[in-house]
Length: 66
Image (cartoon, rainbow, N blue to C red; front, side, top):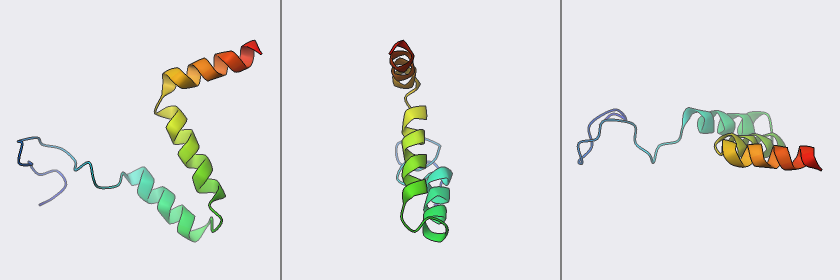
């Protein structure tokens, strides 16, 4: 089956267990460019912030208030 095939529930879309393209890119960078994992850690932290924009906004507002 391909990643865009219809599953047993009839949902057409990507398999959630397969890695996202950005995760594959981070893994490739980590293997080839970043042996100590510093860059990949920063990218993962940035992606976590961007996936929760409300919390990012609150943290930035609190920082500017301080």
